[in-house]
Length: 451
Ligand SMILES: Cc1cc2nc3c(=O)[nH]c(=O)nc-3n(C[C@H](O)[C@H](O)[C@H](O)COP(=O)(O)OP(=O)(O)OC[C@H]3O[C@@H](n4cnc5c(N)ncnc54)[C@H](O)[C@@H]3O)c2cc1C
Image (cartoon, rainbow, N blue to C red):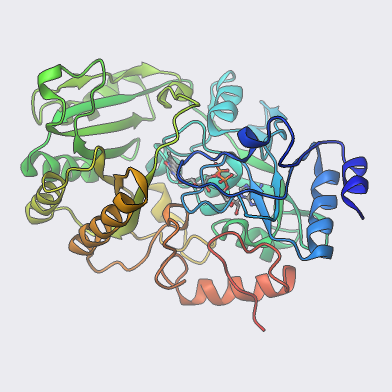
């Protein structure tokens, strides 16, 4: 098939470097990447997906799959290859009575949450509404309902996927159960998912939003202790960082250390207030925006033109005691990056009750997820900030050697056993070898097929 034949055979749009809209279409959430795909195909349906997969396979082109564009590693673009862009696949079909929904892969977490939220229903994704449902689900999905309902994949009932040979497969517990297991944590290694079927939870309102406290090591350790002891309805993301110059932060506090916490209590307002009271009592809040709201409103507002440049490291740790909190404060205070952060997510609850071997996300017993990040300006600064995040992460590392695949950046894991412990990796390699023996889907945290 030639380029013209490809264009004529598709229902969606094909963008070449000279076309209007090409530069917008190749941009991702993160700035700092300037790769130029030979062609970007904005597919319109599953038939288009199969055609593009066949086209890339026959020509041995590097194939990137792009959904919400939030890949921390820049995997959703390519220099000189082909981008299969699923952003226009946005249909959502809701079965309100049955409490399930099919979502096409191009919807964002916010778009899907808003659609099902109209019926008082919800699935947990992450902390950012513009993240694509495809990317987050395939890696696992750790968000503000994680302790109450588990990971996003714990609500995944079925999916439709175009595999490397161009076939569209329906996968669930009964059909291709090996593939269904693998796509729950194994990322984009196995094909292009066109639709996901989710279980929905009845959740008309939550108590959620942002609580900003001044940060000292006592407050950081105290916050984590409270988050660990809190009822499972409460999930928290504590960002320890210099207070940003946001309108609600008094000017004299800009740049002083704070805990900017995103919190969701998945239950009624009174119980939520009770669960949140000890956090509010840790210190006089700098800002308290926690209130009853529909779940989709917990996603902070976003600006489409915002393309930060940042480096980060991710890991799990077992505890944040006074010493760990002190280390966090010392490292953050010792840097002059415009934005630097240690993000702490207390896990457990429903996520931890799923057996490690039930899905390809095996880190069920991990207690706290940490991401350390620094923004950079330009290539030289990037090197310096990268050295800093690496050293900061090393200072925090404890016994848990795992990492969440969706937060691993362009540095890659130091070994694939970080995201995938031994038995999980062995099984993933067997499934990869069966469904993608030539490693067509390799722009991801790649699981190589056995040779
Ligand atoms: C600001 C920000 C906040 C985040 N917050 C969270 C969070 O709270 N919780 C969390 O769990 N994660 C979070 N993430 C990580 C996020 O889940 C991953 O980066 C995810 O891969 C992004 O999905 P995407 O579709 O937006 O990205 P894309 O860059 O479009 O896709 C990323 C990769 O996923 C694969 N992929 C995407 N769609 C498909 C598909 N349909 N079929 C096959 N493969 C596909 C491809 O390999 C692709 O390279 C965050 C990321 C950012 C940048």
